[in-house]
Amino acid sequence: MKIKEICTFLDNAIPLSYQEDYDNAGLQVGDQEAETRSALLTIDITEDVVNEAIINKCGLIISHHPLIFRSLKKITGRNAVEKIIDKAIKNNIAIYSAHTNLDILGNGVSRKMAEKLSLKNVKVLSPLNNRLLKLVTFVPEDHIEKVREAVFNAGGGVTGNYDRCSFNVHGHGTFRGNENSSPFVGEKGKFHIEKEVRFETVLLSDRKENVIKALLSSHPYEEVAYDVYHLVNQYSGAGLGCIGELPSPVSGTDLLLKLAGTFDARGVRFSPIPDKMIRIVALCGGAGINLLGDALNSGADAFVTGDVRYHDFFGAEGRILLADIGHFESEKFTTEILYELIIKKFPTFALRFSETNTNPINYL
Image 1: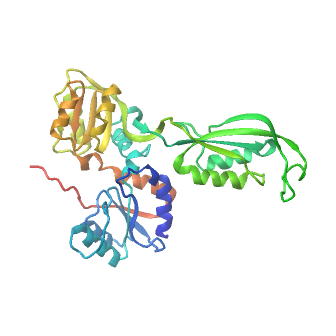
Image 2: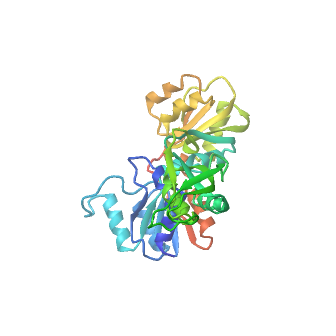
Image 3: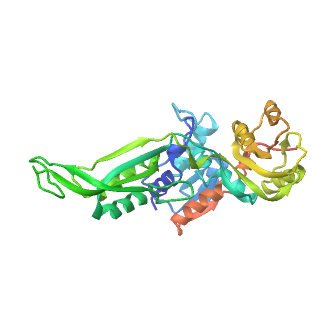
């Protein structure tokens, strides 16, 4: 299989447009046209991971954390990143990363944490803003089903837990083609009234190109009239963090013990334990302390993340149990997300989980 096929799939399944401005998700090293029979899944890219890929003849490494964060002016082997790039290129190994876009994905990092804790009624903690568009177009009645289906298949019409969402109003469209026109209905030079359907639907901004292409290819008119509007609505289907309910309330101490066991967290740090049972838990994989306010406002009894600084613990204010289970530990199941996405699309493609422990933090 060509590396391009997998990269194109991942670019759409975990939209690159979701990533934060500082991020560098996507294909970082390698030839897209190269063939590969297998891929190695890992959280981080280290030299040991590249060696593991070489030994197992994996032509592609797919990681959560990008290898290249900052621009490179030269590759001379001066540091670890340059050495890894050099070794990967010499051994024809491509490197692909899905970072903050995987964090923001509706079924991404935080949702996987919730799954491991068996949380119920899970929803996004901080939904995406300013990413929704509304498409409005006008279609002859006999062709509305074809156009609607094409737009939906291209990614339009998704709202929360629902898809194929639209609003349709029947009316009349008018037009007159000039001498250079080739009208689908009516005659050139003559005023025409046609029974049409005003078709409205929503879409994420990263789907715009595909949706408009589908609209134009399925619509029968020579000149297709359509409008695209920016919406200020939040999109609850994706965003940072998530929140859900435990199967049954537990004490703060029991939750901390469950976190330690579930995520193999050997150095859990936590704020003073509130004198109440824990029922609602908010989560954010990686460094998510900036969502503490969202967790408090959502009514969560506990907030679990990583990379919490000293003064951040004061922000719990005795209202919430703030637990830092570690950056690596909170994201350790990201390779499972990647595996599930890829194997569903390419069931015969060989995927391997890296056996290299890339956690740079040790505990005494």
